[in-house]
Length: 276
Image (cartoon, rainbow, N blue to C red; front, side):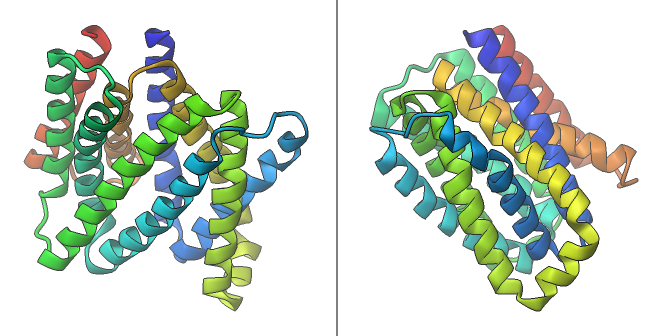
């Protein structure tokens, strides 16, 4: 079960990096976000006729929706004040440490010393990548709030997917409620600009929407099978994949600090996979 969870979370991390690369490549990121979320909801909409209602998990779904809303607000504010390549790694670096603390302290999930070491290595590596650029204090605060929200919805959804009758039930309703709701919100926010973007960028939006199902769907499947602290940290290998994509395809420069961060993430991932 642990091996299956590890494989699912690594695939999730890779798909997450691809989705973010597609999002970053768009000129109108808000409209492209609307397309991604909207397509993910549309793709899974027919599945509601084949999965049970998420009984005993509605409260987790509602809590997740509230935290996701705050997360997106904080993420947008941090992106307004700092480059994505700076703000996002800091948020992702904080998230696994906070998620592990919450899962252990509140829900008494097990955690070993080797898992703690792996979490610290990955979180440190992610933040090494993030601090390779200067950052305004306000942007740092928004990035910190973003990381806190990521940790919160990770712990909430891990409990929710376990409370639901099946993992597929929780996954489908997560994308319908969050994907559909957020996609509609962003589309309304952008107004006419959304339709202009949609006309020319619906194909990458569709691809990223399908991949986003793999990204979080596989993560939720994994959380049903394994412990939250280890898996939440292992998912941050998305930064490792993202850095590789940026260097190979986007021709971004790999600085010394970023290289240290990549090596630290890789070391932490190996610890989490090999030592449970």
